[in-house]
Length: 423
Image (cartoon, rainbow, N blue to C red; front, side, top):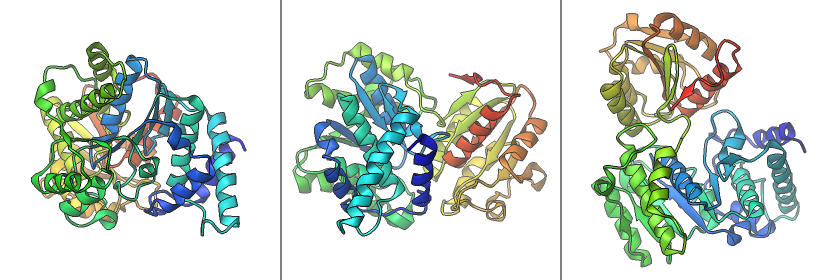
C-alpha cells in the first residue's frame, strides 16, 4: 500500500465530519488486536472546545526543547493528513503513514471477518490507531493526544492517558455533545478517571461546576490553571487568549516534572516562545498580508475579533466559509462588523454551509455593497486581491477546512512564494 492508496482507503470510510461514531469499543478492540500500543506509552490527553490544539502545540514545543522525545496527534489537518502525526516535531513520512495504515486496515478487516466488530472502524478511529502505532515504533517518551470530539466517547480516550487537561469549554458540536454548557462539559470531563492527574483551565461557572463534580466523583484532586502566574512570558502564538493556553501547557509541564521529566524553566520559556500552530492566527507575508484563523464557533470568533480590533488597524478583507451546523448568525455578528469587504464562498465539504445560508447570517451593519460571493476558493482569492490594498490585510476564517483549502491553493500557485509565511 502506497500513500495514495492509504489515503484513498481512509477516505472510503466516509468523510470524518459525517461518519462520527462516538464510542470506545471499536478503538479498544482495534488497539488490543494491534498489541496495545498505547500501553507502552505515557500519554497526555487534552480536551476542550477551544485552545486544545494550541495547548498541545505549546506542550510539544516545550518538551522538544527539553529533549523529551514526543509524539503529537492533532486534528484536523490543513493540507496533508500527515500533519496530524508528528514525532519530535517532524511529520510522519508518507511511506510510514501508508505502512501503518496497511497494518491497521488488515487488523480491522480481520476483526470484522471474525465477527469481533460489526463494521470497520471510522476514519478517525483508524487514524488514532495509526498515530499510536507510529508513536510506539518511534519509542517516544511522551504521546500528546488532542481529543477529536468531546472526550467521554472519543477515540483518543481509549489510550488511557495518565495526565489529562481540559481547556476552555463553550458551545459547539451540540448535535453530538448536548445542548447546554453543562452537558458539553460533562462529555469533556469524562476523561478525568480515577488515578489521573487533571489540569483544568479557567472555565465559565456552569462548566466548572460540572468538571469539579466529576473530579470529586472519581477521587481526583484537580489542578486549576492560574494564567496570572505567566503574564510576563513571551508567547509565540498570536492572540491574548493564548496566555491561558500557555499557562495550561506549563501546568501540564509541571505535572510531567512530577513524573520524573527533566524540564527546566529555560526550556519552558523557549518552548512557549517558539511554538507554532498552523491555521490559528497564522500570518503570511504580503502584499497584502493574509491572516488565517479557523474560528469555527462563537468563542473562537470572539478571540479573532479581539485580535483584529487590537492589531488590524488597516482596512480588512474577510474570506469566510463555515459548516452549516455552526452558530452562523452569532459568528457573523461578531466577525463581520470588523471587515471592510466580505467575501463568502463554499468549502468542498458535505457539511458546508451554502452561500444562501451564509448570506442570511450577514449582519445588517454590513452594507450589501460590501458583501461579495465567490464561486470557488480561487475566485475568492482573485476578488480579495482585487479589492484589498497592498498594505492591508486579508483574513481567512470560519473553518479550518477553508484555511486548509486556501493555503493549498496558494502553495500550488506559481505566483505565490511558498516561503511567504511569517511569524
